[in-house]
Length: 121
Image (cartoon, rainbow, N blue to C red; front, side, top):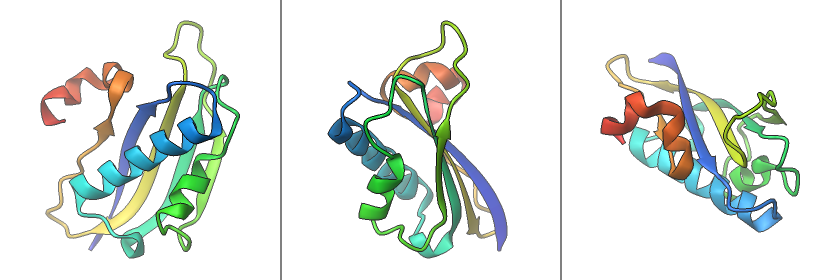
């Protein structure tokens, strides 16, 4: 087994609690599905939000998905002028077999953040 780090992002339609929870749920489910992840293999998960999102913590959605034993942290993204608005990003640390190839996930408008991964999406 080896420790891996996985990146992902999703855009949020509006600064509403349910919109943040839905976008986070979609992102975590997709990360877990594409990487065959189970909660027991996850070491930690960090969420960042752009300054225009403050209606809810993304960790709430992760807990609702059963990640109740995974340490979760929510923080702010650096507000770089001109950057994509209403974005949730995550960095997940997890254990997998040595030959595992991480599948990073960028959904909706956040695909523009990692066009180099577009063909792998």
